[in-house]
Length: 412
Image (cartoon, rainbow, N blue to C red):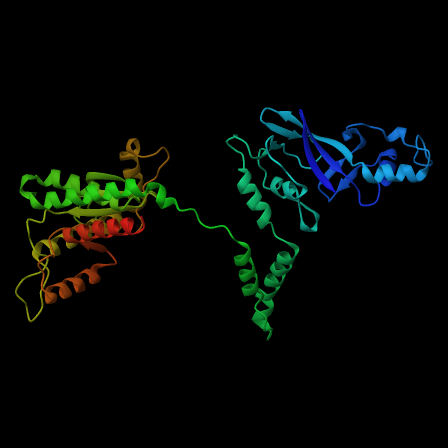
């Protein structure tokens, strides 16, 4: 039996051997340590009361019969002082757990021996110490503490002997099944077993932010609709600036947007100016063109040989994006260094801009009044350029916002 008991400023480990404690006293008498479950390393100096010398291990000693001595040894657990109070924690004595990092346990915790020892007599804190943490803190308010409920879940999910056997079989099967007719799929068995043991459900993070997210997307949707109703009131620059904010809030991967970015024209010489350059969290750049819709369609109303071809503004915008991407790719590492230096003050310290197959985004026109034939031809055009340019209409933006809002409200 192994139990823990908090007594004042100390944490005691109570150990009652299966038969009697005489053999423990004999070990201590010989100067040998007591190792329990290959986890707890105890010496006579850890005893609350060092009475080893008081017990006559070869005779009866202070007891009137040997049977009374054995009876005493069987009923009274050995009490060891294994940890001392340190603020809101018990700090384990350096040698007790046999690890080279400090181990602290919240004083309000109620540990059992299973908190420290797994099957096959594996020291759990010993395994944790191999990860080289500065210290191991279980429970309590410390910033580096493992919450008690998380620690208990860790103990519950610690690999059993059966699971370890399954793992070994899976590793062997990965090779053996390639060359033999072995019929047992050990890898599948391991996955099934682990899935049954893993009872933890994923946290619902969206619930915490759902209300704020709903308010955000509702505001963006209403703002976009209002802009589309009164687009004549905006200058091109003001329109681009506001739509850009909506796009970035819909695509949070972009951490920065720079306007009027000059790039080298590697064909004609001189410079070209990109309207808006987007930078994502990895430093990769994309190019975006934002055009005011003015109620314009994206494909022609009349057909050319029974086809509705892209409007000139759409074709021109796609061509413009493709040229910007061409010049960025030709600029290469020299361009990366130039852009990183130019925008260093507006980006995180040490952040580097990368030109790695940039993509383009074109936002323009309306599709709310397209006929079925026009819509079909427009989709063909979009898919043609999909690998390079994402063509988005303002009605696409409205639908995306409405879809996000509907999903948030459906899960409320």
